[in-house]
Image (cartoon, rainbow, N blue to C red; front, side, top):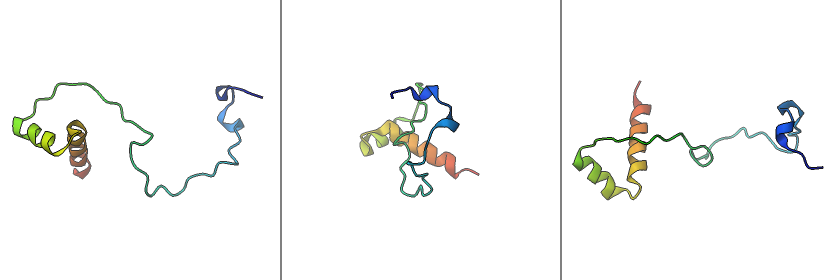
Length: 75
């Protein structure tokens, strides 16, 4: 019998053959979840931008990672 899972409520779905994940060590962020990205214009000092471009082929991702690290170290 083929049916659409949207037709069932969560309480009616049998998860007994799928073990619950309790140990999340070693999980890499971003493999399944992708944060919402927004397009914007950002003015950076030329030397800062050139440094990121020299050091990282994915320099926009590296800049985002650096900003996220800064946020996480505050407070």
